[in-house]
Image (cartoon, rainbow, N blue to C red; front, side):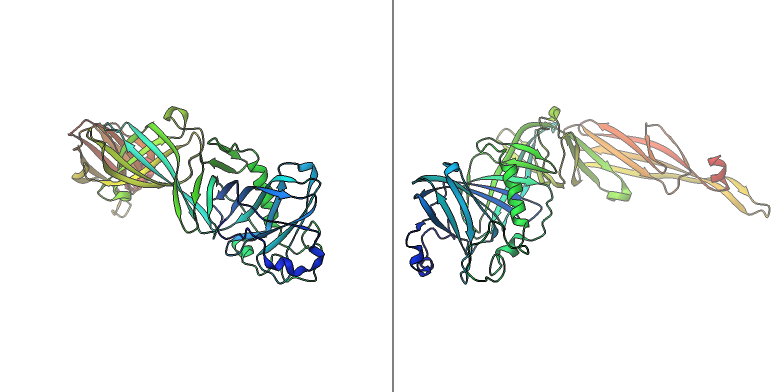
Length: 443
């Protein structure tokens, strides 16, 4: 460990001859370490396995968390071997000594004993990001998922197995604040042997969360990639181990799926996108798309396209997305494009069917507009284009030489398939009703 003291501290010797018959145990290096990192809170559970050399009788083990963001109130130790003959009696915090805890361990054997030490810490975080590589025909995409783990906890973690939790957690006390307390449970009083339970006013959240984490962690197999549901959380286990020094970020691969079927769709809607055509990429998190085993954490996807036989890539666009549950569709907005063009033109406008009130004033009329829409595809592959036209009234009638569908009371959608380097034109006539003509139309 970088910051935890692994040798005996002189302060122990000042306790006097009362310690002369108590064996002082040096904290050895880690054998293994597992980090379970939440992404919705500054919260990580560390589980370390170590081998202690214990003598029969009472042993004392010191544990220091100086210069780290460990919450000392969450420290727990469990014997993994000779468990029925080892009693972790208590953990005390010497008065007037900061960042140091002393475990009292009663052992019925003299042996090397494996123990697990767990605690909550702050300063470790992760985020997901993705790379998509479209095939040349753009019908499938290689999807690679990554996570970037950042360590600002004050502690180096060597050969750590990393587990990631997706989901929100509610905590009453921030781990970083607990870690920075001058004393774990407030100002120390007289030196007494502490009871198993902390004072009534002590922060309890760390202990509760440590037990929650330990219950979740008990299901994990360290050598497999496991992605499993845990009530409102979801757990990802990254295969293998990684060394993550303090102050560093490290990229870890989450998954790699070779051929995800995708749908490319180009959308035009002047009220939403202006005069540009926007490209969208969609797929589904299910078995048919070679996905569907687990939810996909939200993140940023950068999309590239294979170009030529030499493995070159051309950048296509990027989009952020939120958490994708299993069997859910996702549609990614890759931004505006210039190689697909939609140009609507107003070709004619007239008014008709006037009505008058009893004073001879105009009380109703129709407005008739004729539009021509040209769509051009300059790409070397076929494209699908969706064109939405919005009207400023719910009272309308439309005639067109091309099929359309009504989206809502003032929007229609045209969907066209264009071949490579081709164009299409269609026309529609929009009649809108105003004044008394609206009432007649409604009837």
